[in-house]
Image: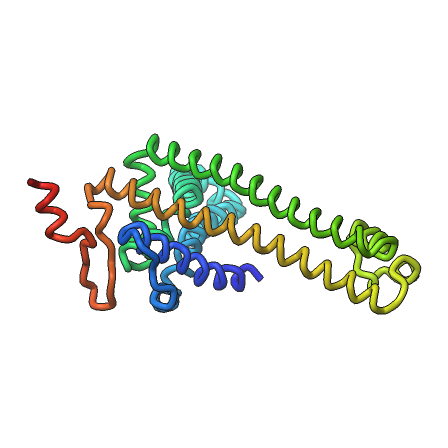
Length: 279
């Protein structure tokens, strides 16, 4: 299940961050098909980006566990653990370092691949180096995204709830008591087909059951839509934050982005515009 969700997110996250990178640089709508093909070409880079740090943490964890198992040998093992425990401390450092920086820097990995056209290791190295080089800048951007994301999620959820409540009350006003029985089943959160005799009593005929199930489906779609807006916001905000951090750490211009399959870099700011700015 986790690998399946990660595969889906590798395509969806890659598409969102690539679209954002192109639109941010070009200041115009990006080609959806081209961005999707880019995400598919870079699928394995996106897929392995969150996994490699976990593998690093797992490797050093296993090293310490094996050291502890070796320590079960009488006399020799105990002495070996006492002498080699500094290695366990070093492993513990790498576990904490790779784990914490990997978690907080994860939201820079996908934008790195989308903007640079690079691979998993470049995404990891840039995310780690940017976090360590500009920790205050990173924290300020991260908190900004978090706060704005929470506000946006509350706003989007409230609007969706208002829309659904308006639809329910207006339709219910016309449908009358029948709709009240449907609302009673919906409030219970159990489909009529699954709740046995209670559902039979509350939902009535098969047509009422059908309406109830369809309304549950529509509610689920609205919830998915709200969640999709939040995910799109997170991907877009993290991509723009990546450009800001890249400019701050490496001095790379905001308008530099990987644009084709030949490995060529393209600066989307035209020469005429640069000359006019210079003049």
